[in-house]
Amino acid sequence: MTTTQSRRLFLAGAGVTLSLPFLPSALWSRRAGAATCKPPRRFMAWFAPNGMNMQDWTPTTTGTNWDLTPILRPLDPIRKKILILTGLDNQDIAVPGNPPGDAGAGTGCFLNMIPVFGHETDPARTSLDQALLPVLNGPDCAAPLLPSLQIGIQGDNGLCDRADCSFSRSISWNQGVPLPNIWDPQVCFDRMFATGDPAIGAAAARAAQRKSILDSVLTQSKSLSLTLSPYDRAKLDQHTTRIRNLETRLQRLGKASKTPTTNVGGGATCTPPARPDVSLPLNFDRGITPPGIVQGHMALYLDLMAVAFQCDITRAITFMIGNGSSNNEYSFLYGAGTLSLPHHGISNHDGNSTKLAELTRIDTWEIFQASALLQRLDNMVESDGQSVLDHTTFYLSSDVADGATHDHWDMPVLVAGGASGALRIDGRHINYIPQMPFPRPLVGPRSNVLQGRVFISMLQAHGIMQDTFGLATGGPLPELMP
Image (cartoon, rainbow, N blue to C red; front, side):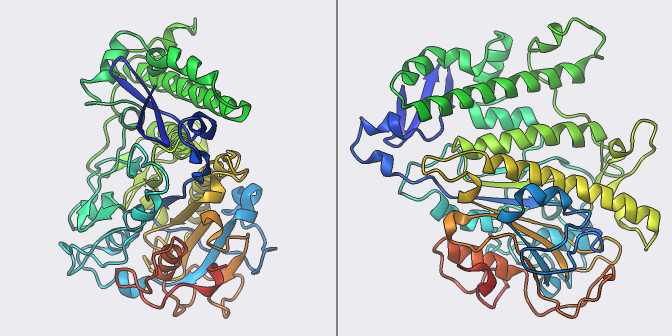
């Protein structure tokens, strides 16, 4: 067993390094007081493109007993640890922007609050996830394996909204440089659990030899288990089991992408290929992501992101369900035989009731995925008795509010987690547009409360005491602070 720092554990063997979760009992005998290392804070931003059907998103009441709208209904099991914020405005920061169009403008400033137009090469463009890294990866405990992790489902499609494609394909930026997404689950897995070049290094060698990451370190894992407390022993067992399950699912994904599933024995489908294929090709003319990728990769990424936080592989994740102007294909929501249902085309609904119903179905599926991840994080118990979610700050929003009018006010915003108690996230719906009529219009009135103040609140909750972020001003939102 080797360590990089006294509070960070790894198992190494056969060219493989396996990151372990925080196990206080494994460190206590090495250094007095090591177990006082607190569970780390984490941050995650989730980008849902093309806005929402705001009529089916917005609760009609405020406080903690707000009504569950169709799109927000999947959040019911976790509603005590979320906030729904209505009426936040990003119009003056995102627009003017020509180029790009509104989707590119909203995506380009999504997590950094700096316009694209006139700021294409601005070195000040740093996203919130990167701004928080000095605190998240601070000196109190050893640094995680990956400083941050950028994930996206859609990949490098052909829709860039008349500007540099980075503004539509990335939401994580550091000093004017985009941090591109990983969009192949196998590459993401190798980045998290293997060392070396994923194409030719240890991961490829393991696949060729039909060996798991765990096979290389199994003996060390068993020896370590004998020294752990019952709590940490169970945590280590959960960790290794989860990795084994992920490997098996990724191997099956690679097998399925090569050949039809004609065999019925079951065993052959679990045989690792030399290496799983990359994602199916995208349609660069319309930027359509095939439904099998949208549905299949989402399930894999939920597992990978949950494990990444629980096992302290990284403490900052950005995730894009689709790029700006996303045309992810959602025909799988409607059953076999359904013709094409690309997201961007549906979001340009023009008030059509059929398209609005289809949009609500897509939006609800997206929120169901986010809720599933939040619930998993809340079921992961830390050494202090709180959950991983309690030590996480989660932010979800979009590039626009309404996909037809492409406005950047009355934005859909979901905040979740606990920020280790530094934010007041207690199940409320906060409406900054008190004059909002119900039934509400597709596009509501504007307020004077900037969306970027949510980020300022998060920065101050993490001890970064600034009253501006990008071009957002006004200080933190008092309703979010304890």
